[in-house]
Length: 268
Length: 265
Image 1 (cartoon, each protein chain N blue to C red):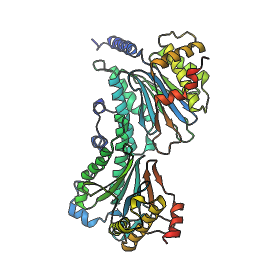
Image 2: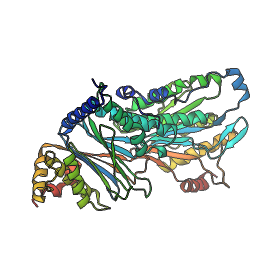
Image 3: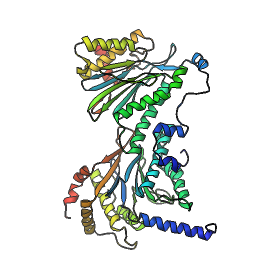
Image 4: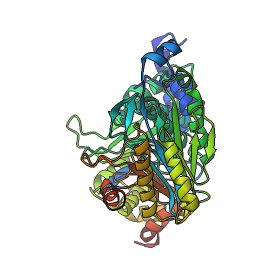
């Protein structure tokens, strides 16, 4: 694989990012490239509009499917809601090249920690791990090519509640009380969620699963109405947003058929 | 002195004798395929001996805890970096053992001014799809004994590791005689417990001796279960996640083995 391991490295347990760095495998910003040159000649692919909110059973995380580069649609089946482990989801808005690699590092970090330290990483540890990855990515952010603004949702198995965090591109972490949304379509989504939470039929935290899913679909559809970078529902191609739910039972992905039925009946 | 070939061979022989002596008391570990995956099993008193390595790989180890720890970390590092840099599908037990661990162990064993690894490892890998599960024993000198299938040998669907060569052979003999395919988890645990008992009974037996009788096994396993903790884990074929490792708790194990523990037969 990567040659015989050295006993020296084996005797000092280090975190996974450190291990990758020592093997030259850590995904990092190209240092030699001039920032101005890059920012003007490359239009990075970006993934847009993710949202998450707490409802009666846990946390719902949803994302549209469009990836864009400038005014081009690059991909219409992007999956921006990524499963990190049995209890954690990371949703991404921003440059997928960086974000997917970040998710990969994160997933492996949690597993590596559990396997090497023989205990699960704490919730705070997991939340911090993503923050650290974002900070490590600062070089790419400054060059304007690798901005990632993620949402992290996880179930706190100790307190038995689902928790929701969002980050800025530099790694600051914030715990969301009710809902959060990031990406280019997020102003519309946040408005919808705020309105529904404050003056809607019920606060978000009291809604049942079907209502919650419906609200997510409607919010994303509203974002697509206003923002060209957010993909709406492709009825012909049957491409629906990705909707996942974290509860005490773990992560469930809503089947496309179910979303299609709800969409047809209540959104379209 | 060791520049002379004879001295070197003598030093290696001494070293082998010393390590064998150190490992001789090691409590056996048995691993075997069952209907839904692979189970690893041992009885112990002091510390954890069965570990998760990667999505489909687990290990059991006897020997010095410091050395086991170094080899365990090395295994986790090699598989994790491979799984990250390429993909989880590219991680294989064969490559881990042959290309990474075996050379490391051999080098440490033969550099007679440095310390060798006082450890003997058992690895199990859950086969993908219809591929059979792999079991592999790695010795302190880097030699490997896989569960076969090659060179006209029939394939064993189990692997064992124990303190002495006699004990290891007896466990293999016992499992070869009693292993059946598609065992339930409960039946697999019971078979693993009996294989462990055979191994434990023959730690200081002689190679020519018979396998312990059924009555002996029943008596010995009851005695041991009273004073030792059961440690077991499974790699589950039907796991919805890429990760297949699931440790089994002592209390649950005792409940599952209940019938065996109570029976006087």
